[in-house]
Image 1 (cartoon, one colour):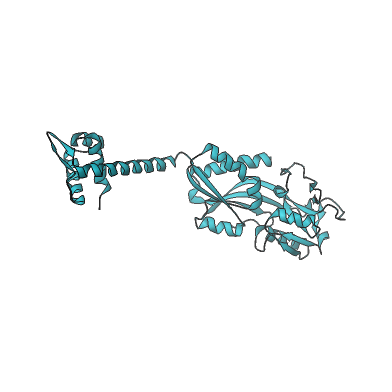
Image 2 (image 1 turned 60 degrees about the vertical axis):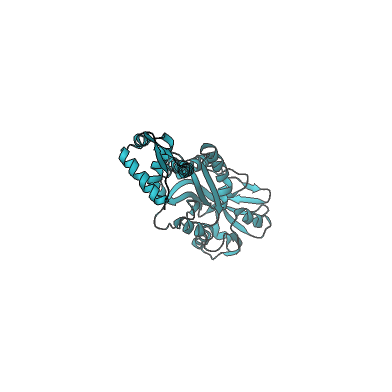
Length: 315
């Protein structure tokens, strides 16, 4: 098998044309170059150089090997440059998992900005639920997860996972626009006992948060529609099949209210949004492996997400 160390020496000899010049370029002695050439000839089983006056010249086999040596040297140099660049610039694959509402609202703008600022970065995105995305992050199938953590059910993080807070938003009670619901504002959730609800799939953060919230209001909810996408839940509300609790970011066409900002009264002409008591809220956070926190690609992602989140959810 050809040794790379000896092939590197041979490439220098072929490039510079003499043992002395190759030794100077490699910062080693002339005898060390000669020794490496002899070992390489034994490895290849053929003469690679021959005397030429006071110098040497490549044999026919030497010219053949010199072409491959130059290609190998260029490949290794490129690898060294790319690895060095990782310390200073965001490059390579960036595998992101995200809950759907944050993916739709935040990630397109952020990924567009990353592509412009870091052309060597290659982001990919998978949507899903936190219960599935976090194990994928822990197993290194993902590099970062844009996830939600609800007031009534803070996200449970596996060992070695850290989070960066991005935005906090209220959760709104969504009812049909012509719903006869009247009463104080915010609406006491205990008055909704007996209603049919739409929420996320069993075991997901939104489902478990709603379950705990309504149990704290004094009743066991009838969660009859279990779908992961908030837009679909709003469609069920619009069709007068259910009521739902949705984060402000999930409301199409509305801004995410900040701590003192206004709450939109309607999501569209078929859904009415109301504040509720007890209040509920959702935080968006970016989860990463603690050991990867200083990678340039993840720092660039965090910076982009913070900027986008601040724009739609001003403090």
